[in-house]
Length: 175
Picture 1 (tube, rainbow, N blue to C red):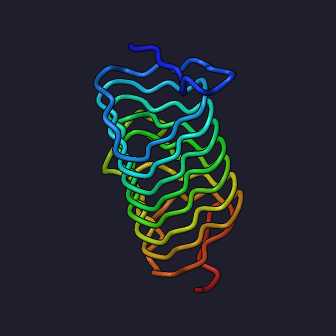
Picture 2: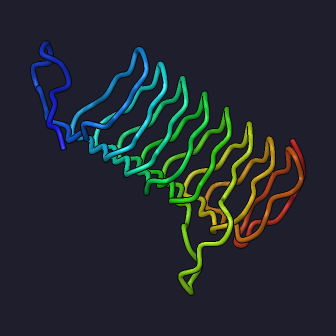
């Protein structure tokens, strides 16, 4: 790991722990106390706030905002123009398309109770995942789907632009 400072002009000059293999695009900004493991790639115009953890194999597209305390378990992909808010966890084997909004404290799950991983979890373009929602592993969230706050999604959300809420989440309408 390589220790680096935010910038020489920053009075706080808090340390980040960043692997030397880390690749980032133009206009990349990073806060303090972040940990970035090996083989992480971040695109252009990405902002990473404070206390962010990006584990091995995380790929983040262009024009993304990763809020404080967000975590990536690694080996996942986040598309362009995505927002990952405060305290969200993106598990391994999660693929997020472009223009997706992940609200604070969302949790994606990597394996089932038996430790099986299955197919990737796939969140398609223009989806909105509400605060503190939990997404089971190996599901697909279709284009434009809204997941209500504190919902538990344990099966595919197939209806494009559908609104899913509850525990377990059920389709209640479309937007």
